[in-house]
Length: 300
Image (cartoon, rainbow, N blue to C red; front, side, top):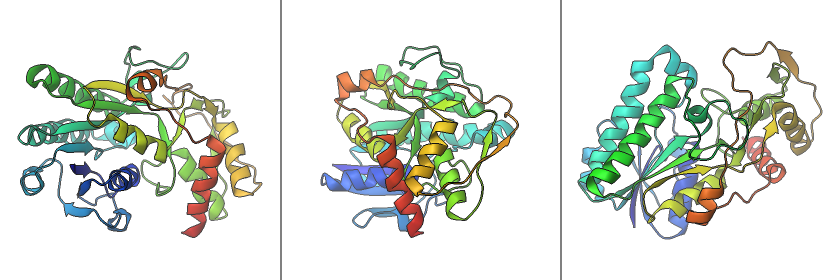
């Protein structure tokens, strides 16, 4: 298939590009390189430097059959400080990608978010759980999902939204909207000391980026829908840091800071629907994923 991957020069996107190339697809990356890096684009893919708010020229040149839409404003703090900017990229950008895809009859697989949409969880959240975003970022992603669902009803398209858990793995940089795994490993590698905010009992669903890329591939060619992409396993920040130290072979006590206002205490996704309908399950255990990520960090 001819595929366009928006944000394909980024962390998750570059792994998705690799997965598509591995199955023999013709892959084109649409990325404005504001966060992505050209060196992340695997050999065999074609990079088009462009903005998702102006995708038409790239789509006319490529004429894609599938579009994996990963590009986004992904920093929660930025979304709070600049909600109009967040909506311009995540809502209007997604709408323009949808319309460009429609002009070529292409399916869209959209990267959404679990934790930022469900809010505080009392257990693994299914797709039917109440949606309670705590920041404009979650609201803008939810809005993107609703546009996809509306297009499916209006035009009979098979677009899919994937609600990602906390994704970690190689190529995630330790700044900007980076996850805690990248931040902790970056500090340990550079001789720094990580900070755990609050008592560290906050839990997240940490999912390896390779498993996430497999979920994207599994969604291609299916009927439209919304699916959680996570492990269903909760890990506290304290437990995560202990596991990172084991993976790194480094023992270094963390500092503790004051709890951060508005931080979720519990976030975990129920992935059973994806298992039933997409045949997808997360496969790599956390310890193995952290070891693979640390190996990449040490090569930098």
